[in-house]
Amino acid sequence: MDFFIETGFINPQLTLMGGQAFRFAQKDEHFCGVAGSRAVRLRFEENGIHLLGINEFDLPFWLEYFDIHTDYEAITARFSEDETMKAACKFARGLRILKQEPFETLISFIISQNNNIKRITGIIGRLCENFGEKISSEMYAFPSAETLAVLEPEALAPIRAGFRAKYIIDAARKVHSGEIDLNALYELTAENARLELMKIKGVGEKVADCVLLFAYGKSGAFPKDVWIKRASERFYPDGLPECISGYEGIAQQYLFEYIRNFKDTKVTEESLCSVQSAATG
Image (cartoon, rainbow, N blue to C red; front, top):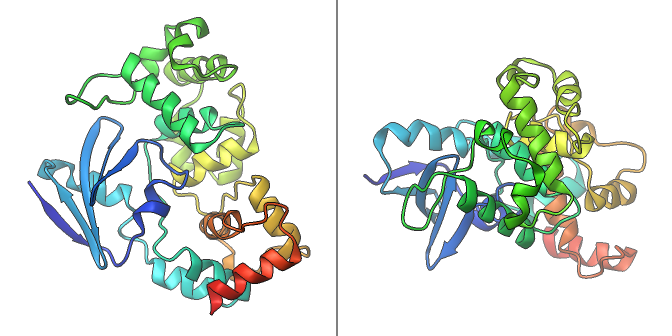
């Protein structure tokens, strides 16, 4: 069945292809992908999304996945009290934070360490093809913790994850054994949930915060990569603005898209000013 969901404008490139999720691809005017074990085909319009060929029982899942019930217009209006955030929101208009399945998000961001989006996507694709259940002629479900927990790191050689293989297996074993209860993290504060995730080998603050933001909707989590550190040093040397309080993670994603599109990766005064002028003009 096909469904149209009125969401306001969503930018699919920024939302699906910008480093939150790694299992979507654009095919002509459509985006196709998998979340967990659910495949979907999407067409985006100015005021909403067409969900094509899905089961009506999966509709609530996709509504949650795209965080339909969060008012991003109100959030970005609040952010716009700060001039830099105003420019970032205009530059990254239509960006939304996805709410993904925790185990898939955890493994994806373990894989993301010291990596780029193209290579992350390739590793995750090979992980699913080798160890996930086939759900269509071209698509595979994300493998479960139970499936991965019985493997040794050497078994992951076909996915070419390098040093990350041992971290993937450690995460799967800790989740499968119940040592890390991913469902319990919904009820914990961001600080306590972060500490739980960091019991997994290879999970530091940045990976943990990505999981908290992109899986649990803990919008106060503030993942810091090189781009965000540059933005903080340049725009907020005295601390983040009050207008993003409680929504630091969402603000971070707008800043991430804003600053990483500067032509000069050294982030000189001239390059920052030129892009800010373009975004606010």
